[in-house]
Length: 165
Image 1: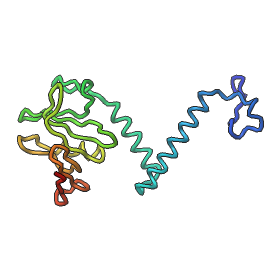
Image 2 (image 1 turned 120 degrees about the horizontal axis):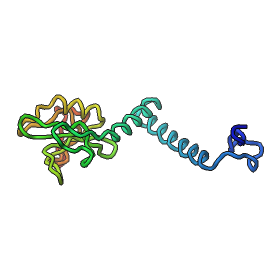
Image 3 (image 1 turned 30 degrees about the horizontal axis):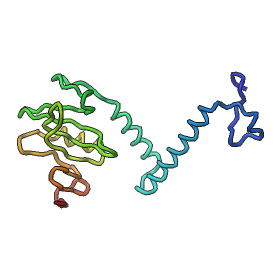
Image 4 (image 1 turned 60 degrees about the horizontal axis):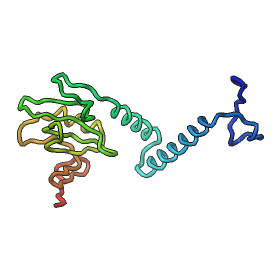
């Protein structure tokens, strides 16, 4: 007994009616099991270990939680971006979560952005943003999709670029 409750699992208890496990714990357990099942399926589908999937999931969660304010006064909290940079050319760029991937947004205004490049992982987007000089009429490297032009680059490889429109 702990705090007047029995330490049992309602699903394996020999007397479930007598089990005093609280309903919130049961709901959390079922949700955790469902998430683990989805993570396992994702790992198998993508040839990853369950550990890799869980680590990337936690990292993605933490990345979304980071909303710093840049030293130049740009409020990343307002636009949900991370790693904001202002380049000597006057352009600015940052990284945002975009569904299950990440994107570098450039030429940001309070209402929108001028351009966008998509990356499979936050790490790829971060490295590309760090390496990019932000010069006029340039773009970061390593992206897999450029929605504005319909271009795609499998694995971020420019030599494999295709255009869909």
